[in-house]
Image 1 (cartoon, each protein chain N blue to C red):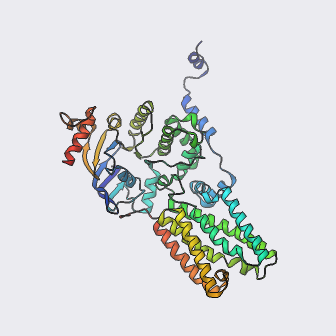
Image 2: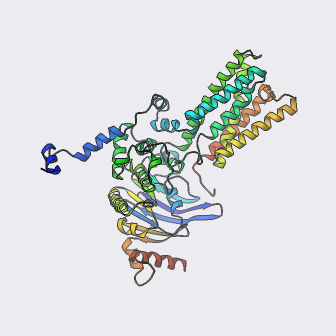
Image 3: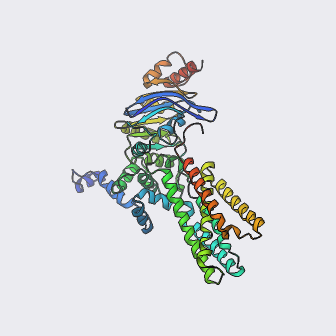
Length: 247
Length: 243
């Protein structure tokens, strides 16, 4: 298992953002669904080792991120796309991706080839030498994905990766996700259920800091048969599970 | 003959064109690190840390020029008035530079940086040391210029009088900036503390230069620097608990 978390809780002052989450997952594409404020981003930030849990235990890639040495090893094998990607406006696309490849401690000799591969995978080859300040929101999102995958991560965490992408780019991105999920654990936080249906092998639904459903997209769809609201079967499953959790 | 047929004629069947293109792109897009970055990479034994060092906001050319200009003006004022202005302004200038070295409000990709193998605490340490060293060198040059212009006192006393207070002010701004996660708060804390110290020194001794000439203050400055460094170290740990 690449991700093993037990009883993980995270508080921000009086606010309980994540309330005792248990989760285990291996290679594949894992969709993390939920309404705004459900705790998805906080859970992802803990998995990215940006913040620690208030209680509970995490094991990532077989290591305990609470200690410096294992945390550093996890981070070398980690890819993370935060919800809001800050960027250096004066950097080019290639420079930005290269910067994070170096911060991930990739061997310097292989960085140039890895950067070129990552930039091409997100279809930004034509913009590799363009300054980031000249790019559209969707292109910047793809730059963020490129830096996340530049080290061929074993654990890839993507927070709202399709925000700002046009339909054509989203379809290409789902293909990329499925490809990455062959070898790595890819956890995608989103509130777009169609992304989950198209790309994920496993899905969890969060509400009020808790996981209220964990299964396959087909199982989530089945929960909505004859119940729930929404245009698509998966949306009906989503709304049915949420309604049941809140009742 | 169309383009596909033409390509078939000139490309051997066993050549993977996309692989060739990636090799070309890797060479064309690769950035050649400058001399300074290569030197920093060798010294720090980490190309990532070297690159992070060179993106420090308060080490960018404009900032360095502004710092040099302020200290040059201080050196000129020192030589004209006989008051050690360099010693009084150097801690404030260096403290501001330290506060603007690293943090969530300064580094646009700070959230991402916090998930990197090169630890953000190490980046902060290297950047703070570099900013401090640069300001110390510029301050030394300004002090030397003032001494050369005929200010009384030994070169050592004029020069080193401000280094210890500068250390304390830098540590204070660093601690305030990391705890509050705001460079502005760090600058405000450093400048306010230094101004209060200067004014307190004046009211106690009648000379507002007492804060850089009174050797009895060295120990309190060092104690303040140590305490603030410990606070900054604590504040930059991986956040845990309820904050």
